[in-house]
Image 1 (cartoon, rainbow, N blue to C red):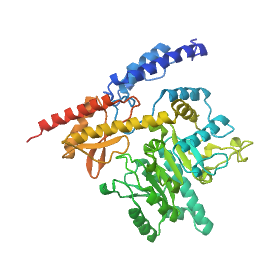
Image 2: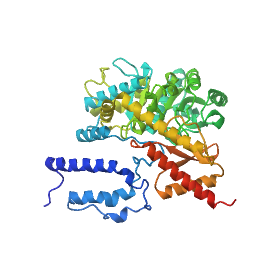
Image 3: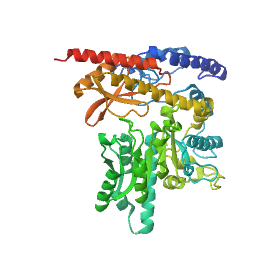
Image 4: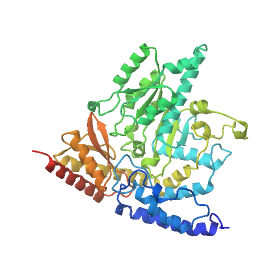
Length: 487
């Protein structure tokens, strides 16, 4: 009988080999084509139809990484990857993830692993202080608010929406006990910008409440302003609807636009609406004093979320969410079967994070934050953000110097929206050829009815030379396209 698995001695050996493989991969990543040249279904023919009866040799498994996996990988951490938004990656975070995997606790309650819960509470306070969040969002030892690590910003938006729904239903029923919950929910309406991420609309679908999109305009820099919002609220209330939730976006996915929360917050407060702020990408930049004014107005919010796993060197998944009143979240999700009860849960001294999220289980994700914050320090993290912003500004300068191109939205952080002057078809051809060449990778967006290319500085290792190479490549393809067009 073949022995199965791996003992500690072999794990030591193979672990060191894997660390070397990962370090080599990341050090030489720019030599790989950033986007895979495979067709859908490529992988199935490369491996057997069934799992092996007897264990495979470890060497065969490792050999298959390059044969089976790497040909189909989009290399998000390549300095030639400029698509979507960044996904964070750093050696300290990877080491912490290894430790988290080894400890392997499922930290749904304080009793399930005290360190898992307590480190998370403190790390969210650390990060909240880095962002200069109002004290109401910090747990401290006596605060009513606090932070939690969600898996994604999509989850944070949904959790906030469900908590807001629960709060408004309870309030209305307290005033009018005869009103049925289903009747109230049928009249609820939530709002977001028409530039908000699709996950906001999806949250409305899952929560079973209507979601209305507030129109934006290029003249207002694709941001939601108070006047438009107030007009929509007035109209909906006159129609018998109950506005209860607004998801503001700071740093929209298409163009990194910023809703005007200093105008929108007071409206939400006056209307007794829950304001949630989604700053998934842009939030990391608020640790820099020069970008912190973009968060002005957060004091009006009930909840705030951003993803350290996008731009703060903490590997996925790590989405930081804060609430002013944790009782609002807990009230929406609390369930206490006997098998999850423990001696300290009513003491007021501990947090049971299972009441703050949709899944019950949760990993020891705060270890990644602890390692990264300590090994980079606030100054190191600020320098990282500033470098990416400067690289985006460098790319913007290149675009503006070329009369064939135009900038489509303000460049505030690490995203540049640009296009060739002229038709959408010309720009679609440009993007198609850029991605087909596999030297760099971009994705598009729609802005003010036009097809626009997005250039997001993503990789930790991106340098000025990579941006220059990317622009030369784009410029060269643009020249080819213009030569092919009839005069």
